[in-house]
Image 1 (cartoon, rainbow, N blue to C red):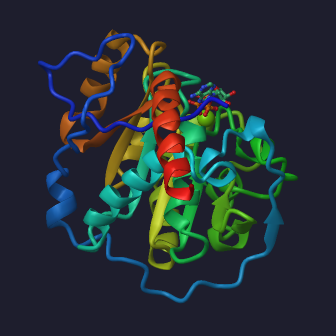
Image 2: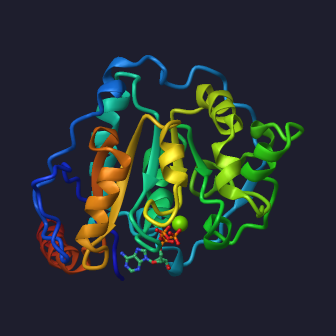
Length: 286
Ligand SMILES: Nc1ncnc2c1ncn2[C@@H]1O[C@H](COP(=O)(O)OP(=O)(O)OP(=O)(O)O)[C@@H](O)[C@H]1O
Ligand SMILES: [Mg+2]
């Protein structure tokens, strides 16, 4: 099985991100200044309402390694990522994370699904996924959920309050506001003040909010979405995302807004780690 692997890489103009990214000890990016100084992101303060439950259908094609293969190196990477994110959240200053990437198919949605599952820790934390890729919504399809009203409906129509469009996803233990009915003007919809109002209404109810988004280079949506997030995580597909695209994306988002880079697609190294891990586990079990 191939795995998702995470790596934090502190973005800087001088550093190179080669086509096949080597595994390097992950220095966590500097926390954006506003994350440590702003009080806008206090942890969940309101009682979570009861939400309807939807059952996801989990198959290998979902690439939900954190849930399906919790002893895998990939799952371990998510635990590491969670640990690092928690360090910031304990100060109550980091809650809303934009998950974005330079190009299509870098692995943003896969990252969101696994990270949400890791952060939720089987219901210990309240995690909301806001599907804000209104051009190519994929989460309902990946999880095989039947569609219901979502973000576009809340943005276009005051009659759909955002809390009314959220469902709890089982067995993953987190909450989803899906993209909703496709619209002709997704970029314009996201740029209206309504998105900010929706985030303000949702924020007090959750410990973490992950914003799945479209790729940065072909579309401007992530740049406007970034205003509503405390920080961004940049997903880069190892051996696939061109370095120039990564550099351009860092420039467009602004280095100060990027918490870290997460490498997706480091399966070969995971394989070596897996062998090591399994042989050690066997020794302990003997
Ligand atoms: N490490 C990986 N190895 C192999 N396939 C992967 C890996 N990560 C993701 N994929 C697959 O690549 C495709 C794109 O992944 P995903 O939908 O997560 O990317 P995305 O960045 O959200 O794409 P989009 O920009 O179109 O929304 C999916 O079919 C997914 O299963
Ligand atoms: Mg996606």
